[in-house]
Image (tube, rainbow, N blue to C red; front, side, top):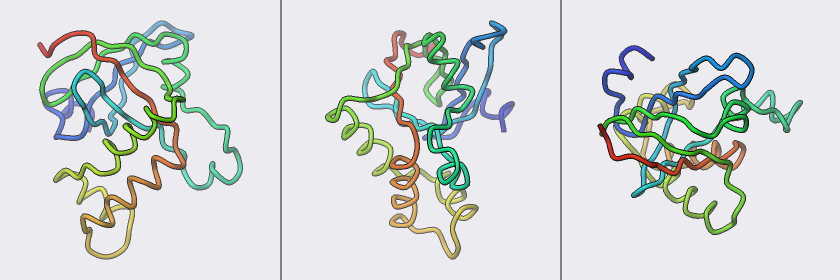
Length: 148
C-alpha cells in the first residue's frame, strides 16, 4: 500500500514519516487520519491480543514521535509538516474522538469488511472506529505548513 499511498492516499488516510529514535532514518507508515483545520487526528491501534496481555504496549512509530515529534504527513491534499503528540486533555480527546469516530469515508467500507462479519454499514464502521479509539492511543499532529 505504501507506494500507492505516497502518490495519493485515499481520503481518510495518510503516509506518516517519522525519524527513527535510534537510527535517525526516515520511517514511513500508512495510517488512518482525519484532518480538522490545522490539526490531524490519528490513533495507534492496540491489537486485541496485546490489549489483554500488554495493555501498556507502544508501537515503534509512537516511540519515534516521542523521541522527535517533528514529522511529515502525506495526505490527499498534499504534504504537510507538523508536530505530533499524544492527547491527554479531556476536551481535546472529545474533539479527536468525534473527528475519528464519526467520519466515514469510502475506503472505510473495505476496511470494515476485513475486520467485521457481514456487509459493512455506516453504523458498523463508526462502532469499529470507536473501538479502535477507545482501546488505542490517540495522537494529534499540529500541522505547520500548507500543502505543497
